[in-house]
Image 1: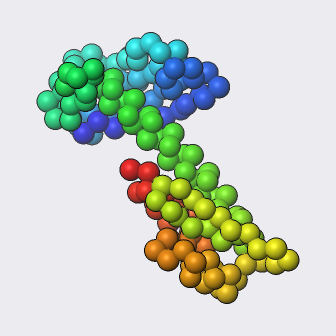
Image 2 (image 1 turned 90 degrees about the vertical axis):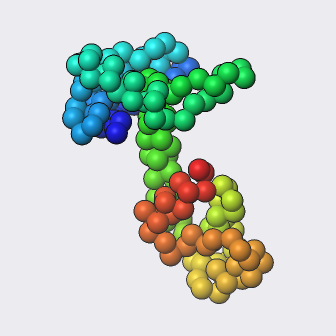
Length: 163
């Protein structure tokens, strides 16, 4: 229902919240642009205010409430936009990390342990092979080996473990 597209973040300008701008879509239609300066203030919206108000009402009626000092508060559109930006930033971070794992998987064995990634390096070895992976797997049964997986597969595993 609520989608942000064309998200641009500026981490260097973020202090208390994400500094960002994005196209805001509701019910499959672009209704405007939402942005935040990253200094802890409210989001700004430029576009169809009536559509924004309908989207805000939809969020409050359909999304889970959240606890604010013992009081359940509705999730409004601004909070939902913040959640979507958080998810976007996290996905980008995990994509970079997944790329790093793929790049270094010829030198190390990587295991997913809950929401953490452990790595093992072997001395006097130019490249890890199936023997190294099996040795690590035998010592740590039940953990997921990331070696041999694509960046997208690793990213999906990391996203699922972080949820």
